[in-house]
Amino acid sequence: ELKVEQNPLFLSMQEGKNYTIYCNYSTTSDRLYWYRQDPGKSLESLFVLLSNGAVKQEGRLMASLDTKARLSTLHITAAVHDLSATYFCAVDSGGTSYGKLTFGQGTILTVHP
Amino acid sequence: GAGVSQTPSNKVTEKGKYVELRCDPISGHTALYWYRQSLGQGPEFLIYFQGTGAADDSGLPNDRFFAVRPEGSVSTLKIQRTERGDSAVYLCASSLSIGSYNEQFFGPGTRLTVL
Image 1 (spheres, rainbow over the protein chains, first blue to last red):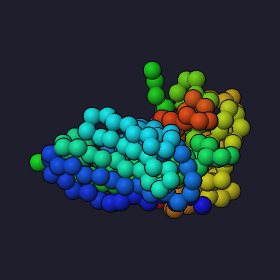
Image 2: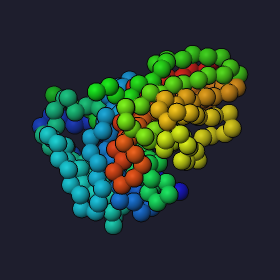
Image 3: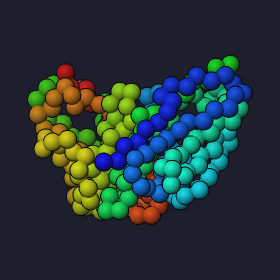
């Protein structure tokens, strides 16, 4: 059974600082997604990572995927308040179960002035 | 264009009642997914459809849960004899198809409360 673990689960940052959220998963997969969720809202797609070594960047966020280590990272550069949200990674089971996403527990990010 | 829509946005029901939750996917998307999100947790997979057929229903918790997509577009998630533990936000997502590129776009969710 595929398990996805994120850490940290809670992250309090000062504006302007850098930090990394980690996403580990337990079985082979080469498709990983990062989503953002604001309180009371649905999930917004941030990044789609489809191969080993994939790196995507959008603004102050950069995501990478290492399929051999079964690890993805979401790096935040010079955080700003607008980045405060919950961030989820999700791994596609692949094989005959393409499309079935298993989500991590989420990382609640709070950026302080 | 229009995103995934779900109705109702909120549903309050009593234990033992039957409920239906509706999802309207993005036009042209053939794959449709249902997830359930409990407070403070990540979404949990329930079922997904490719066209009209359920491709994988392994996440449905028991036989009280059933979903249909009769014409390959709108889907309805049906819950019989609701229990308090069914209270959660039910999220629907759609994607162009199931395959190597599978970005799922989520709707706003239906918050179900079972009293």
